[in-house]
Length: 443
Image 1: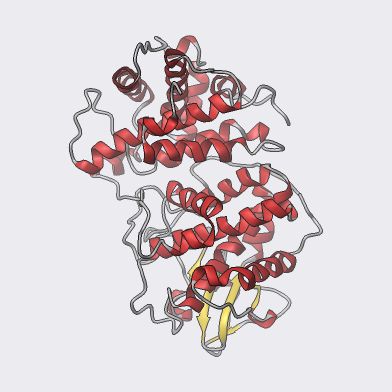
Image 2: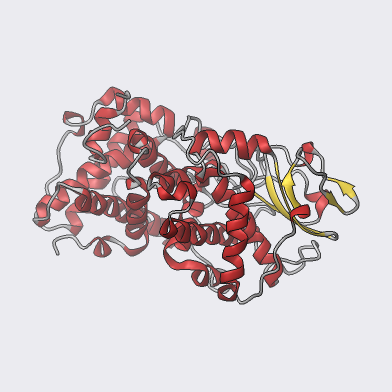
């Protein structure tokens, strides 16, 4: 039993414990590659750590499924679906695909691609010799597989083939000069969306790791692993998006398919990634535990009292939530963890006030939506520049990432067979963008 099991039960995620972002160091050599880097820098990069703590879902599923097997399925997907991206698809030949170092030498602009150029990275590059997909086996075969099972490498490969389709369709400049390319954060989100569209088909067909529902939770974990660091510049040349952005894009593709992802360029999605304020730089975007608990309690009381008839808050949340465990989670994840855990408590009281059921998976997903509606309300105030919240609470860059991380962290014991975090996060996103009305409270 893990130390956060009591919090897990508060969230009611389970009843029994069941036991690509970043900086591209090779861009000057290869023109304009698009990558999923695990070793980012300050310019739209990430630290490859999914926060300052460990997300280890494990899994050695489909040990006999090679990278080549996964890539073959991805290429077949695009032969079947390129028309939905307003394009034809020309398969990438085997000699233009591979690990570095690997069994073959990959050449770009007449020079061998070296291990240091692809270290802890994966990218698609428009080399004069032909479109090329390369990766570091330390990232793909060791890190991602070790953390997220077969789903980890698969979603990264699918992301890179999203870039392949962008090059082949003209979304990205095939000459590698980047002339007229859309912003990096948008093309990276579109590639994440296309990765989600591929995963949806694999889930339907029971392919490889996606025959297990837990692979969807692992996919979300992989998206977070390659996010930009909180506070990164969304306008940076190599920006990939916050964890919330990348998860949203992935789930957009999973739900909407290739055709929906194609529309990203003409109708860009909401981008959560933003720069830290001066105060955020000093604090890392996180308030002290005692301060954030007071603000969150006040704002949750105000929000649900204004939106739910007959609402009564739960009073002192520490009558239900073990304070020491929440303090530990706050230290590990950030103040978004407090907002998530308390938000689920207040959401349950909102369900009770509305006469809704509070037990079972359906009510759980509704609570996730209600938490999202509250966070979305705060976010909307900030975007409108009309923050009138008596509590003074606001969202810092990375707070929505921390909500996602909290759902994943507290359901880690359930990863072996649930997939519940993927569904809860989809409903949380519904609340963020649709508001409390879309949570269907009292219906």
